[in-house]
Length: 82
Image (cartoon, rainbow, N blue to C red; front, side, top):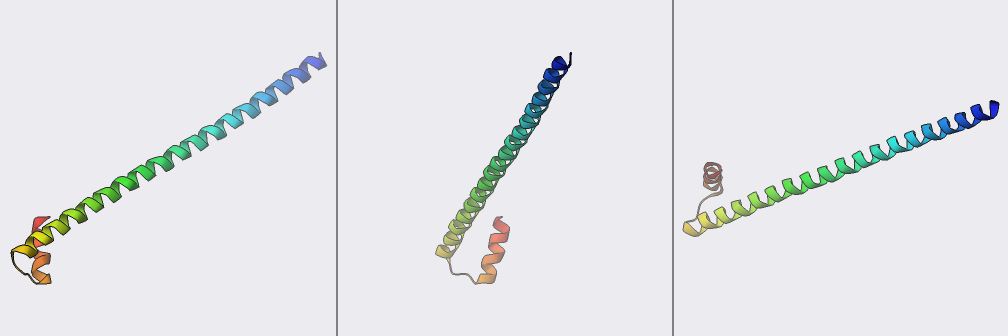
C-alpha cells in the first residue's frame, strides 16, 4: 500500500513538473511571437517613413526645378501637399 502511494506521489510530482515546464515553454513562445510582431511592425513603420521621405524629396525636386523658392515658401507648399 505504501509502495503504491509512493509511486502515485512520484507520478504526481513528475506530472506537476511537466505541467510547469509546459507553461514556461508556452510563455517563452508567446514572448518570442510578441518580439517578432514588434519587429515586423517596426519594419513596416520604417518603410512607410522612408516612402514618405522619398515622396517628399521628389516633390521638393519637382518644385525646385520649376522655380526657386525660399525655405518658408517651400514649407507652405509641402504642408499643402500633405
